Length: 151
Image (tube, rainbow, N blue to C red; front, side, top):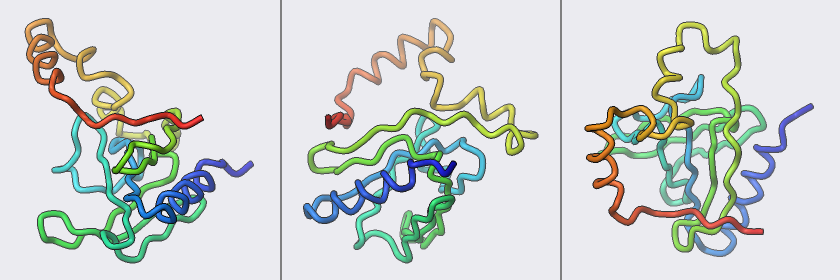
């Protein structure tokens, strides 16, 4: 059976754009097949602006999302499967939809076991030593963007 994730992402994208908001997606940068600028990945996750004015050639097919965007003035092609999307939301108000993390496909994991250790599925604090935990906690005290769950 085809996953409903890509359908829901497209529907939420259309809803966000129709309301003149700015659609963003949160992507698991370590999911197999994800091709995003690694310099912009934080704690295994990258947040991408999908506004029509920010991307070129946006294609959201059932099995693959692709588009071009500028990072540091350089046009970059981004590719990822819909299973790598952890959330879609509007920048202005955080309204959107989170998705449960998908298990990594076994056939794509060959040679990628080291990525599992840095996966966003494990919190950064869980992977740190006690001395590093206090540094992480103090840096995480700053207010970060949040995602509102719409029911």
